[in-house]
Structures are given as structure tokens and as C-alpha cells.
Amino acid sequence: MTDLTDIPAVMADIGARAKAAAATLATATAERKHAALISAADAVWSRREEIYTANAQDMAYGTDKGLSPAMLDRLKLDDARLQSIVDGLRAIAEQPDPVGEVMAEWDQSSGIHIARVRTPLGVIGVIYESRPNVTADAGALCLKAGNAVILRGGSESFHSSRALHACLQQGLRDAGLPEDAIQLVPTRDRAAVQAMLTMTDTIDVIVPRGGKGLVGLVQREARVPVFAHLEGIVHIYIDKEADPEKVLKVVLNAKTRRTGVCGAAECLLIHKDVSQTIGKGVINALMAAGVEVRADGGLQRIEGVVAAQDDDWGREYLDMIIAAREVDSLEDAIAHISQYGSNHTDCILTEDLAAAETFMNRLDSAIVMHNASTQFADGGEFGMGAEIGIATGKMHARGPVGAAQLTSFKYKVTGNGTIRS
Image 1 (tube, helix red, strand yellow):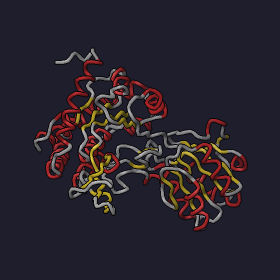
Image 2 (cartoon, rainbow, N blue to C red):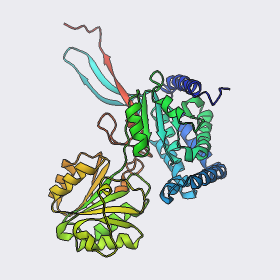
Image 3 (cartoon, rainbow, N blue to C red):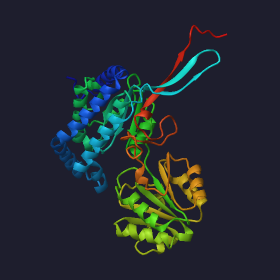
């Protein structure tokens, strides 16, 4: 057995086995991949007591480390969240297999026929932090797209991830697919992350999923291509033509449903014409729900708000805190988001369809919304079953990264003894 203290040797072995498994998976039938995912879903539910025991170890570890309540919430597993993992695995299983899909095809006057066909990427490295459900989501999506995956979870979710990983491997065994198709780095040592970033011979793409520190490290040091999942500095702009009832429902849900997810609202921009009416109402409702509101300008006249500081703009709290700013116009709101946003998810609340269209066209975020909670920024809610992350870059995958986004393509060209003149 490989010595776990010899990180380069451990990672080289994992990489070699993943590459071999990827070659098998590339031609695995849709039926076998489906069977593996259904079996894995069954295993997650049947082994839930083992998973909860593992999760309790992680919760104790996180508490000892001083994790915030919001971060502990991201880590915690219960029946509802485990059922969500099971549902996600089943949903991914039932989706059409993307591998081999003909994306486009056409004939040329030269006599050749060309088809652009989806193919697996190969080996994907996923580096993530505390949410153990990413283990199941990422493993399942990579498998569905015919890729082998190397998972490196956060130190806080170490035991939970191992328990979920065991269920994924059970599914692979039951379907007659190589267990090496889904591997979990077996150590908390951060040297394993550094190793993954330079494994150009065996890893085809890295997907970092976590905070700004993690993603920044990966982007700076990776020698392997990266699908960047940056922090969710999510803005909601309340326009002067907003409906007060919709504002109240959407903003409260966007902020408080789950504060620790990347689609949680972090900054409110309120048109000056409604700042002391609709704006005041929603800010009071947020504070009544336990949210600390850090505001500037005229919004500071609202009793109970805290004065915003410069570093409150462009900040991802992942907590019961939200920044709020009064703006003079739609243009000012767009300018603020362009300066402080992270190109993740931004929303406008308005009944003015022209304003909504301007907002959604002008902003270059991966997801732009109109009159809908930003908590919908999620692959499951997009019909992808789950997601491996929200890609905020502009190359290849963007927005929720599901199975189809974890493929590349090749051109199949067919002739009949055809030659070029």
C-alpha cells in the first residue's frame, strides 16, 4: 500500500489509475452508468446511519476549529439533505447521456459529411471545501459524462466525504465499472492540492469549488486548465417600478433561505425613489428575520441598520449579513455591480420590462435574473440534477456546470473516397 506521507507518490498513483479508468469510461454504455448511479443512490440511503456518524465527527471537528454557524450549516447532513443527495443522484441517472450526442451536423459541397459529437473530457480534478454533498454531485456528474474524477474535499468534511465516496464506489462495483473512476484523495494534507494543480499528464481540467482563497490559489498556481467557480457576490437591484410584495418574498428568500450557499444575496441596491418605502419595508423585514443590514446614505436613517464600511461592497458574507446601498438609477446599479460583483448571479426586481431587459443584457454575469430569488442559482434547479459548481469564467462551461458541460467534442468527418481538389 502506498505510504500516505509520500504525497507525490500517492497522487501519481491516483492519477495513473484515474487515467486508465477514464479510457474504460469513455466507451461505457449509458445503461451501465445509469445502473451505477441508481445503485449509489440506494447505497447512500441504506448507509445513512454510517454517513451520519461520519458527519458527526466532521461537525465536532468544525466546531473545534471555530467554524461559523453558516459554515457548520453547510457541513451538516440530515434526512432532508441526504434525501436531496439521493434525489440528485437519481436525477442525474435519468438524464440523457451526453456522450455521443450529435451537437450539429452538415454536408459540404466537397462531398464530406461533418458531425460535431460530444466526448468526455477525460480526468477531472475537483477541489472543494466544506460541503460534503459536492462529493456525490461531482462524482455523479463526472461519471455521467464519461469522465474519471479525483475528488479532494475539504478537511472539515473529510469523514462525510469518505462515507459518501464509499457509496459511489459501491455503485461502480455493482455496475461492473472500474472503482478508480471515482477516487477520493485519502489525506487532509494540503500538499495533495498542490500536486493536483501540476498533474498535467493525468488531469485534463481542475474545478475548484470554494471561497476566494481556494479559487485564487488554484487560478494562480494551476498548470492544468481550470473551470473557475468564484465567490458569489450576489446583488439584487430593487428598481423604482418594483412590486413591493414580490420584493419582500424574493429578497427574504434570496438572503435567508440558506445563507451559506453561493447564490445567497449579499448586497441590495435600492432606487432612491423607493428607498424609504419599498426599501425601508424590506430592510425592516430582513432585520426582523435576524439579518444585520449594513447600509450607506439615506438608508442609514432606517432605525436598526449598521453603517456600511468600504469593505462591505464586493463582499461575500455567507452569513446573516447583507449590504445595502441607495442608487440614483438603473445605470448606477449596473455600474456598482460591474465594479463590485463576481460575475456569478445578479437580479433585478421590477415590473418595467425594458429596465429588466437592459439589466440582463448589460451585465456580464453567468446568471442574470428578473423577479426571481437568486437561490435558484443551482444546477438542480436548472434541471441538471446537480452541479459541480457555478463557473464564472467565459471559456467553455459557464453558469451551473452539469454533465453536458463536463464534455468536449470532436468532429466526425465521413466521405466516400472523397478527395480534396
